[in-house]
Image 1: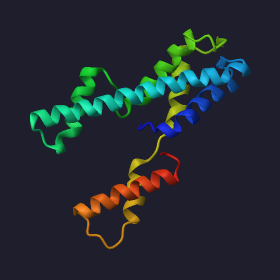
Image 2 (image 1 turned 180 degrees about the vertical axis):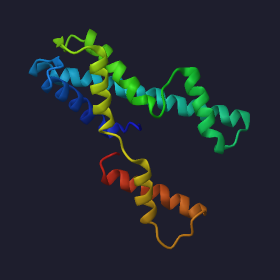
Image 3 (image 1 turned 180 degrees about the horizontal axis):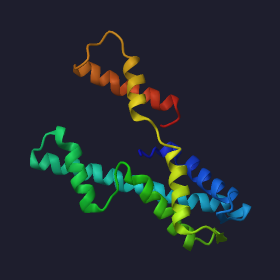
Image 4 (image 1 turned 30 degrees about the vertical axis):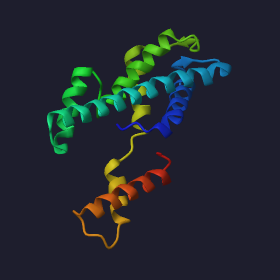
Length: 172
């Protein structure tokens, strides 16, 4: 799962709303914005750590003279060292963090569901916000005309087109 900053408030609202509507947790109407803000803070902290990891990977690669084609491998190794989730593990990690927050938050009045069931429901909600990155890239690629693939100009145009597609879909 790739977490987009623009979607964070929407995700937080959906998690609190759906769990409340299903009777899994109880949050007073007046406390819902604060409960949502707790989840926003968890997701923003994840993004902050992810950004710090990316910067550390880039620095490490530059210092070691490692080519950019190995970015993914180096990032995975460093993420493991940092105990930072990537890919499919992100939604599982966030769900665990949310549940821990539900147990200690003063804005959550009551938790009625067991941790395991609550975790599965939370993961399902998070997965409903998954974005098909390949579909975004394909759409961006289809917008590029008259530039030969594999050139520097094509890569620049692809990044620009991808940014436009993400803006149109409300991801940026």
